[in-house]
Length: 448
Ligand SMILES: [Ca+2]
Image (cartoon, rainbow, N blue to C red; front, side, top):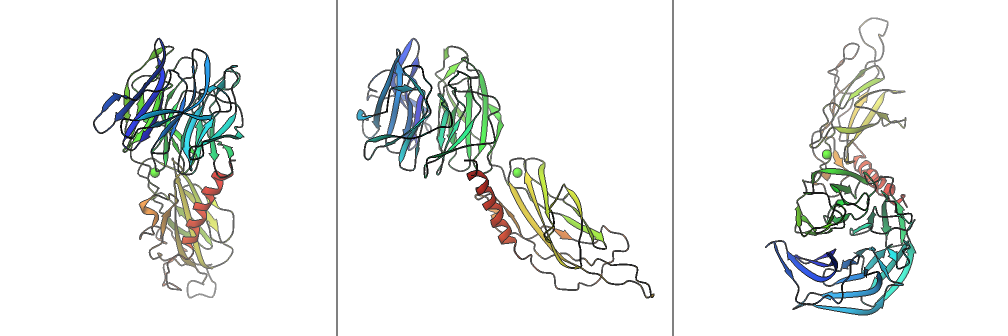
């Protein structure tokens, strides 16, 4: 079954309704939970078509009926009583089990299977305004029955069936600006096809169920994070295992339509999934102590709302190799003003940084003739900045509080004395934040 969202309505097209392929089309309005068969007639029966919508109209691509593989493009205009029109434009050849998205002014149709049973790697572009259909590139490998979903910038493909009939666990990223396809280092938890996918219009792609074999038994819901390229299973799951569903995002929730349960049971259910709140960035915080030119740092006061923190990185501010771990030590080569920046990463890959600046002084101690060694002079910073790498986060702005640089944890020879210089706001934290965000961007674009 294939589905699109137009406005506040989902439209569901074709599919397999035992004992045969279907030509029905339905509308579903989430706010009233009302599903209706359209009076406009879908032109012919089929299954395995893909669908995409520009938000006004929708198009379905190819499909298969009684062994006939179709190349047609069918336009659905839901305005008024609605119309279905078979366009003059045709796919390069008959094909079914493609995956389609709407992205940047065009529909893209990925992979599929031809009448000869050949799994293909085509990337086909359809531009409704001109009616043109063109083969614009190739996937890294042939695939059919993958899930495809688009964000504002990219299309993503998940799983599918390879040429040899095996399932894959690939996550691919397609960039319409240069038609390049990147392969993520991340993978689906297990190989599968027949997954459905939606984007929450903000950050996450949700993936529903799928088929690990010709039987569709997965009820897992996966969450792929387009910010951090991480994927994980969410707490909820589908009522029963199923694959070959169609899913749309409407008004803050995902709706999953129909599908195949097990080896052959066709479902008529509509499943609503309301995601948990998005991940929030961690809140880094640390204490500094030490003696001599040695500093000890402890990030034990850092917190995260969702889960334990994953990674700690210490930039000592002197160009030396960064430290790691919740606690760390560093020996400076000289005294003077020092800035330590802690970057913490949570289990979902969100990062945030905080910096503390202090003066590391050397002076002699005691009234005797023999100095007892260098003394570190500590004082808290004022309003060190905290920030996060998450572009949508409200905590992006600098907030007061954060790291404490104190000597309170140390015993002699550390001694609290009057500051040698005025405490100051950490310089360069804004730049540090920018670099973090840029690094994330570079990381994802390099996956191509
Ligand atoms: Ca978090």
